[in-house]
Length: 106
Image (cartoon, rainbow, N blue to C red; front, side, top):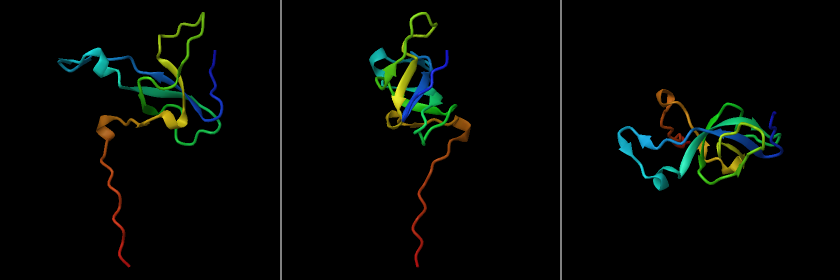
C-alpha cells in the first residue's frame, strides 16, 4: 500500500522513541515533547519539504495513521500539514551555525 498526501499535507515516519540519552534516563513526560521524523511523501502544494528530509515535529502534532491489517508501528506514521513541521534536522557533522549577513553600507 502506498500513502500519497493531498494538498499541503506531509506523510512522516517518526523515529523510535528513545528513553535514554547517554547515561541519563529521562522521565517519559520530559522525553515526549518533540521527535525526529523522516518525510515519506508530500502533497502537491508542499514547497518547504521533500521526500527523505529529516524533520523535527511536536509529539502531539498531526494525525496518527493506523490501518487495520497493515503492520504499522503504533503512532510512528503521521500525516501533518506543512506548517506543523518545526524545522529540518541535519547530520551533526554537517551542522553549521547560520548568521544573517550584515547590511552593506552605501
